[in-house]
Length: 472
Image 1: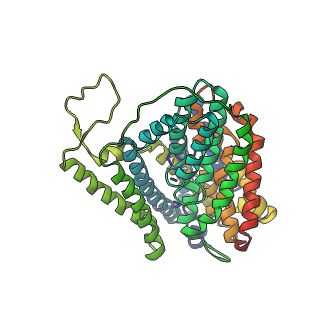
Image 2: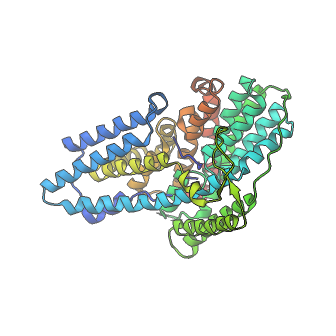
Image 3: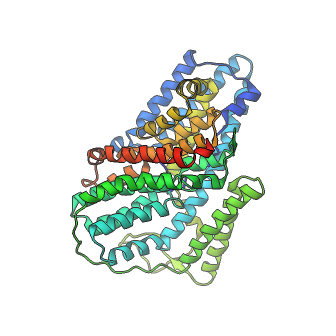
């Protein structure tokens, strides 16, 4: 379950456990019953998260509950040792970092929801349908657009948008739908890696303001991953191309126009991204300041729409009375943010932060980056991300803060982002498309093409090692 956002947008603001340890010197409880119990709690909570599709329990609930129990156990133990303030300081540090992440993502989600309500995405979808493309042309067009849109919007929003096009045009052709959905998952996940706004894990790395042994990871550093990400998508897409039916679908669609103010909101979103980047690069302030400034601009623009007579509705319910439409209100967009995802991030950050405070991340860092070496460990991160959500994986790595070069930090950003494409359950885009294209795009359907996707995974790593060797 990777970001919904679009973002397949999300920042980190992941707590730096290493920093906390430097000032507080917590007790190593990795072999204590409390540590083992906490580890088991997180493991059970995450199993429940992975079973969300089957048990219909929102993913935020088990990890939020697990975080509360883990930190309560830690606090109780330190109270018994007469040193309660160490836990309080560590918890507040984690909470402050999460608050920055929360505000950043709320702004990003608000812009995406505002564009969705103004029918920006629907206009694009109906325009593509009306173009009358062949199945193969549509396969490449939707894949390319997913690759180009996901660096700005999240991978989930991008995949759902392009998935709607695929289903509207070729819903009766299951082979085309399956191959196109796999293509969309790979393209959306790959596109999200080469900008900090494309995926939560990329944002986490950028927000951490990492100082590597050979330089600093800046906003522009991520663009070194453009070619590796492109290779990650093109290799499997080129192979799957020959399996896509060489036919032209039938069907028409009426062009839906964008609503008033749509282009203004798109322009403000791009301006907000620029402000966030400049805030971080020129003023050395957190990017969230720029994002909130952009939200202020959007609020003023929504006031302009309201005062100039804009009326709109927020429901597609045919039984709803639309005789008295409500004025355009930006807070309706904020209310539509994916709160389950935001609280899921809270639970994950707090759980992993607690385990780091107990000493488990130090053990993991020695085992992976000490024994395996940085390259092998970072490649393994991508494989782990195919099964376990990449958010806690990247959070754990950023909490460990292994001593790596810029090239290695970019490698783990790449692998954590594209590793989820190996399985349909490895990313939010894949999980969402399985629900959207139910019966046509399935776990085993994706699994059949996993070797092809894995070729792209290996090729992207090789491309990065070759063209960015100066960063290592």
